[in-house]
Picture: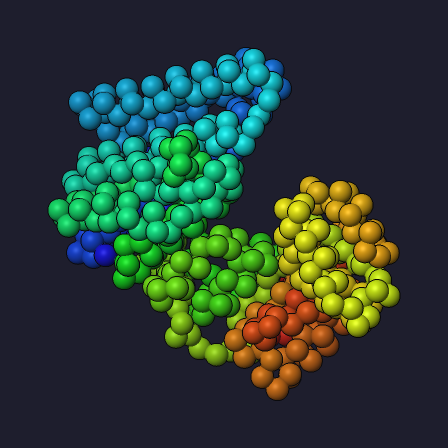
Length: 454
């Protein structure tokens, strides 16, 4: 059994969905389970509808609802024609759009967009796409069965970023998905969406959660492999939008892929790898527009390279806390990180000295409140408009030569902080925001050849 996940660009229209059907057909002998995202761009529009409605802009919101309805109906007609299957699918989708319009109306009256109501609206995209894709598969001669992912993806009640419950998911997957596969049929589920185990209310895993859904389903079913189909040929040595000549990585380690996902690589959701890692399930990253490409295999058994890839991200804030009380004091770091936990703010990179701590924060939402609480521990300084460049390789710290080359390649780029991960496979460098791009280009040229100016 294998799990195939297709992102929004892979199911953006009728032509793309037909291509997906061909890919699935080529894997019939491997008992495929299919997970799909919403049609490309649909989730953004659904979130716009929610926000417009809550602001009282109901007419604008309803126009967006109707435009999205027409898009789905047009694709359904292109895929299914005008037979009974088409009538059933368009009727079901029509009812869902009616519900969406009702939700928009209710939000405009309440004027308050809660995470729960946002999930109710955002989840509609995957519900629609999974129904449409399953019908398109049947039209193409594939024995597809739609399975409501909300009955399988059991989560907690943390709306908009729900935490999956693996044991409950495993039980539901064995009960609802496995029998379909054993019957020779192809289950089709939406990614990203789930339901609260205690109440059954719809939840979502957060943006990028469709990859996570596929990995969780794959782990629950103990699949032989998980294939993530996207719009690039696989994982590359750098973001091709930043670095010309970025190269395909044929095989990469689980730990390397996780580090790259956490530090800016957009191919995978950072949490995607974890369920697969636990069971040693290989993950493949493939291009639905170029299915002949070998893609990237993510596995335990990967070559040990000094540098596998360069990643980067902007919009980072550097937080510095200085306190003489740190010196020979137990519990200071615990108190420090309790502040971040209390404000639900995650930390990326940390460096400490005897009397100071420096760390980076991606999400500035709670930064002002954080500063207030951190000042109880010492002097606090915030440096905004910083960025992170990450150099990742399983052999990076072997001998230290690669790290030396990296710093030499940066030349006159100002460095604010350096941190080597506990595993020694990720050297993170904090630089000015506008230096992320040139730093990535210089580092890529040093380790992979080519010009430093892309």
